[in-house]
Image (cartoon, rainbow, N blue to C red; front, side, top):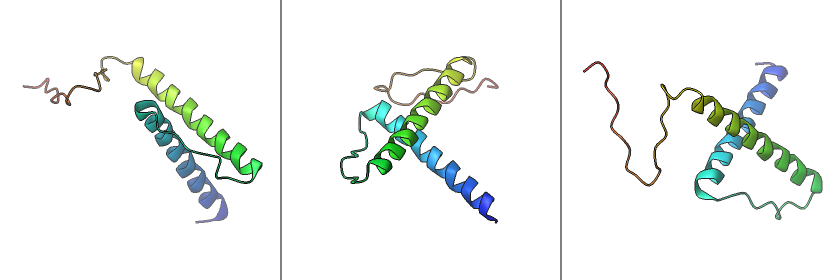
Length: 88
């Protein structure tokens, strides 16, 4: 894999982790502590990446909300619902 492929793969991985962190923050309230970073540039890059993850998470939620026939909303305090089997 060349340099472009490696950078693309690494970028995708970073964005995927950022979206996962956004989901964790939304569902549990846990977030990253950035005061351990001494460099302001690193803090701003981390803030940008986490903000990008938040935005992509919002886009995914909006997409899923637009198709209620495919995705359903469930109260997180309830146990998982059994799978729908329309063929039965």
